[in-house]
Amino acid sequence: MARVAGAETLTARMRRRSHRVRIGLRRAGVDHFRGDATDWAALAALLLAVPAIVAGTIAVPDWCPPATLVLPIVLGGLLLRPASLLLLYGGSAVGLIVEAAALGPYSQGPSRVTPGTILLVGVIGFVGLAIAQFRSRVGVPWRRGGTMLFDLRERIRVQSKLPALPKGWHREMALRPAGGQSFSGDFVVAARTNGGRTLEVVLTDVSGKGMDAGSRALLLSGAFGGLLGSLPPHEFLRAANGYLLRQDWDEGFATSVHLVLDLDTGDYELLSAGHLPALQLNAGTGRWEEKAAEGPLLGVYDGAEFDPTKGTLNSGDVLMLFTDGLVESAERELTEGMDRLTGAADRYIASGFHGAAWHLIEAVARDVNDDRALLLLCRD
View 1 (cartoon, rainbow, N blue to C red):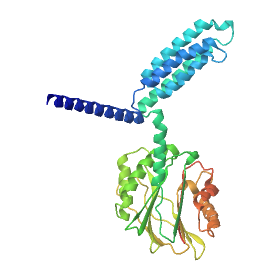
View 2 (view 1 turned 180 degrees about the horizontal axis):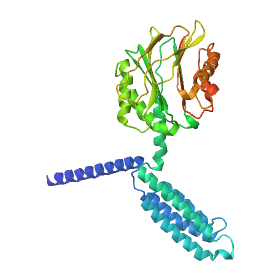
View 3 (view 1 turned 135 degrees about the horizontal axis):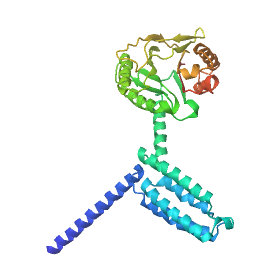
View 4 (view 1 turned 180 degrees about the vertical axis):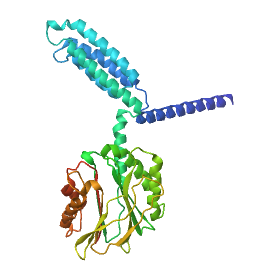
């Protein structure tokens, strides 16, 4: 019995140790991908690289000049924390001293440690330390920072995708940030509600442009996406206005247009919060008509009311929603920009506007330094 108890005790110990090892490996993996893992391995590798570079410089200075010491310093600025980086700098300084002593004074020939070499290594080290301190203060490691920004950009794009529409309907949408950046102050959220019978689309233009407005647009797109479909259509802009007011941003206003479309009948309501009027193509007359609803900007004052305008999309009709960056600029007025937009859109009537949204932005406002968004809804 004692042997059995001893065997069971040994087995239990082995299981506990195995469990601790698995937990440790799991935590280490999580810390690595979060950027919280220790940097001792990178520090050790870079410290070992310093004497290797020093040896190469002493042996073949023409092929491995003294300035080669900037390589571990640059990598250290990307990989190490500020405290570890200072240790690497100390090792690099010792390496420079050894190189200078071994190669002799710089006045005796080329491929020696010169004042310019010391200045170059010092400047690169200062820049690397500044980057490491900024990265440490932000809390985003270099190996994950780019991935995080990429993920944020993709989330905005996913949230801006329009749901699939039933047969007989076609939709086109294009977003183009200012200056060719990846983040825009314009965004779209959409959902099919009422059992899929109704399409609700919200196009919003946040104050500012590009990266300046991108972070606020990301926050608002998530909030608006949660509100859309959770509230009656006439309550959405009121709730959005209240949410924006509670943020208390210095530059916190936005314009928005909310479309509520019955996919069975083509009847729609358009509610606007200081946004530009929509444009509807009447297939019977071939003319574009403005569809303007009244309402104040979002985030200006509490208790705002938003009065809808109504319309119907019949067979062949097209409805365009867009932001001011597409039709308005310092060089042209709003009416001129809308005329250019409708003139360019007439070319796509015969093709049913398939693939037209992006080409319309290119034709009307290709070089405008502002965020641009265009949404087309067509009834075949």
